[in-house]
Amino acid sequence: MNRLLLYRIAVALHALYCLLAVILVFPILVGGPDAGGVFSGIPQVVIVLGGLLATAGVVSAYGAWRFQKWGIWLTIVVRALDGLAALPGLLFAPSEAARLSAIAGVVLGILTIVVLLQRPKAQAVA
Image (cartoon, rainbow, N blue to C red; front, top):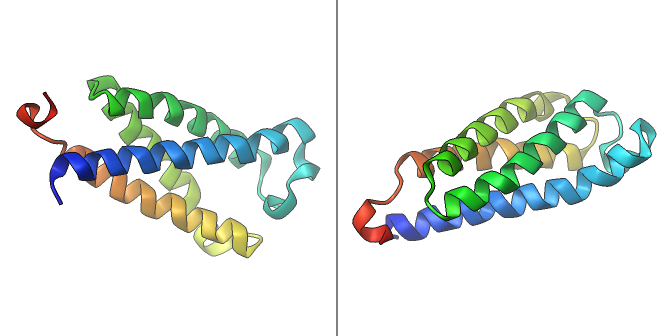
């Protein structure tokens, strides 16, 4: 698999993950701490942080898709912070859905950072 295709897949997965997170977090933020559903029991601070990171992730995915340097670095920062925020969920998640979400966040963060740090050469992009 060439670097450009792998790069595009990583950015697309990052964008989809962030869009899904925005869609899932928005009703929880509007309904308050008791409207968590399967994510009840997760501290409100983590939910707010997840919503902010997901929103920044959508913006960063746009920049990374267009090979903008700011978009690539913002994506790396967002994935690193999201992965770090999800780490406690690996051991202390209140439900299996929350644990799976934490696993997905950590794995996607690591893979996306590795792929974006090895971005394609300028000749392949043009």
